Image (tube, rainbow, N blue to C red):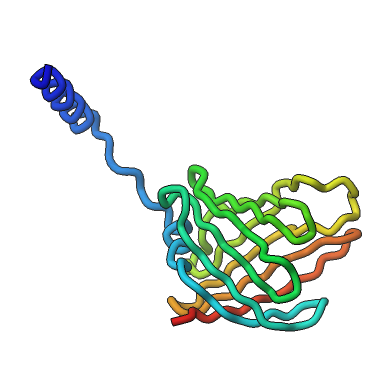
Amino acid sequence: MTKTIAAAAAVLVLAASLSGTEPAAVDPAWAMLKTLVGDWKGTYSGAEGAGEGRLSYRLVSNGTSLMETMNSGHDEDMITMYHPDGNRIRATHYCAAGNQPRMIASGLSADGKTLAFAFVDASNVTDPDAGVMRSLTIHFQDSDHFSQDWTWREKGKDQVGTFTYTRVR
């Protein structure tokens, strides 16, 4: 029996090597997002004023998803989950407004420093004039600094909040 299992395993390994199957390429956008793992502090400014905030990133689900926990001091913690989906990155933002906008980024900018997420849809939105996050742009400065521009749309008007972060060491 043990010889049979060993022979079957050897056949599978040989078949995989002969099929030309290579490991999946790492998406540069996903690789860049994963560099955010850790704790961050920063400031925000926008139409609603200015203040301080904190972010925490950690890989979850065996490294297949990145969880962002945002504490802005004026709301309960908000969570944004990021994960690869083919050659795109999906983000679902669990907003303090009680809805869950879903966005997609198709890859890093040509200079490799910007990742822009565009709105796809949102759950738990019953009023067409209700406020919903419509986009997120992440600007990677260096390993210890980055910023986010969150666009909120309410009653047809967009407002951008800018968050600037420094890694906590």
